[in-house]
Length: 197
Image: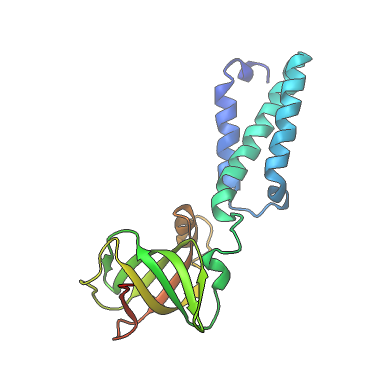
C-alpha cells in the first residue's frame, strides 16, 4: 500500500473519479458536503503538521472522493433561489417573459428555444424570476432569433427521461446546462410573440 503513494496524483485522481461516478446515487451526507470538505481539509493539514504520513494519505483520498461527489451534485441538485423559474412548475399554464439566449434549434418534431427568463405575469402582477427554460414548440419559428424578447403561455415541467442505469440521462444532460425547467406549447397564433415593450 505504501508504494502507491510514491505517485500521489494517481490515487487522488482515482478517488476523484470514483466520486464523480458515485454522484449518481443520492447520498444523504452530500447536503453537508462543503462542511465535510472543510473538516477533511483541516484534518489533512493537521496530520501533515504532525507528520502522520499514512493517515494523511488516507484523508487525502477521502477528501478527493467527497470533492468528486460534491462537484457533480452542485449541478444535479443545486440550491436554487426562491425566485428561480423551477419554483413555478405546476399543472397550470403561466405567462412567461424572457429572452432567447441562443439561436432556436430545429428538430424533427419542432423547434427548441433556450429562454433566459425575466418575469412571470399573473393577474397584472409582474413577478421577477431567473433561470433558463428549454421551450419546445411545434412547427417552425423562422421569425424568432437569438436576443429576441418574447412573452408566451406554457406549462412548466421538470426535465425527465429514462432512469435506466448506464444509459443517456436527458435530465442530467440538461442539469449540466443549468436547465431545471422545460415548457411545451403549440405553434398557434397568440401563443408566442415578440415583446416590444
